Image (cartoon, rainbow, N blue to C red):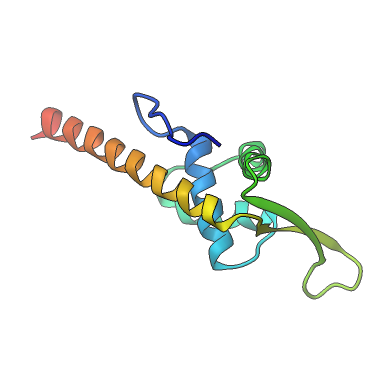
Length: 122
């Protein structure tokens, strides 16, 4: 992971957005991939955003590759044999740093959207 995140010039990329949420959701509770996807789809449904399966797993794999998360196999709650892959932090400091970088980027995107609304709908 690079020291400083370069802005894309326009709005935040989907994968960066998903990685931010995956870090936050990992902070809050241990979830497995499909449960993460269900929660994200439910929370963003009112905004017309439905993340797809492949993008979520690409974001998870990026976080693993960056040394932020790791996979841990566990028995699924309520089952005797079924195992699912949960995600835990390997380096929580890297995760917090990534979130700080994304906060700067989100503030920039917010300013861009607010300008467009003012300029075109005021």
